Image (cartoon, rainbow, N blue to C red; front, side, top):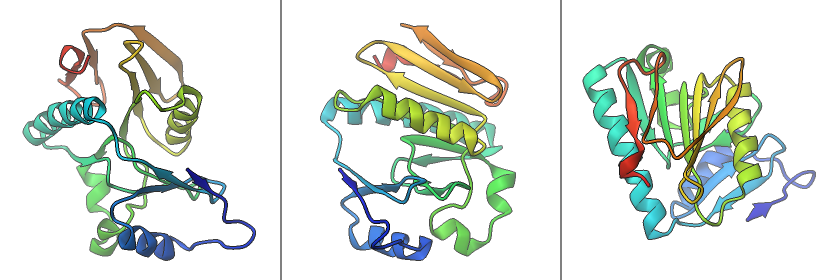
Length: 188
């Protein structure tokens, strides 16, 4: 669901954060145009797949140590004014530690280095592709749009055309995520 607010109302970042806290059962994003996007809970299969991806990235991140992983309930305030919540995000530890404690407690004021979006059966592919491009435009270094129904991964990298891989068993995070490969056999 998309809620149009402008020109009647424009929420400040603090008001959006407070609104989100009052409505904790909703996943709320704000796009660069100031519209609020209310996303429904996922179904069981999407939830299972997303948990698998989060676990794989999390285990690698814990062992590797140079970055921090975030789940889909984390809001990132992008430089274009949007507040987005990727399904899985990873941020270099040095970038995160440069933020104040207050900045880390609310919507994190940066774009993750890695973003992963998992397409559910009700998601529009074109909207997700636009969201992935938005992440790149705001500083993401690597993005994976995973489409389990089509068994495709759309790979987004800075300065490189989007690559679409058909039915891969895994995708490599190198060089950003040195030594990490997402095992998609567990996701499909």
